[in-house]
Length: 141
Image (cartoon, rainbow, N blue to C red; front, side, top):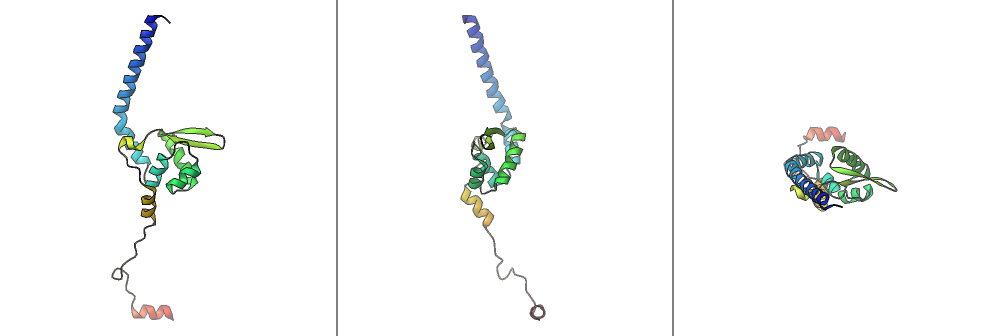
């Protein structure tokens, strides 16, 4: 390859790298907004973070979600451009396009996410509705 052509190619590569850098920087706010809009709860954030070629069963297990939910989320994420489809021997999977940490989005711990879901607050005796004696007698009759 002539030296002049090699210099032109090197310059084009340099310009493309600079273009990619500026494109990334200028789009960070839009991508972060999109991620926050699409990843509503802890389960979705955990599922997205773990969508790196794992099966829907594996992602669902880690995220505490159903396989059906994970596959639905993958379809939405792929259409929105925040994940890429992966074809594997036993079906389709998704691979996340972005790292949540790169956008300052915290990845919840699985135990914390499950604890929040399962936490049931029982009313204290003062919060329980009072039942009159007449109502009790009627229900016992």
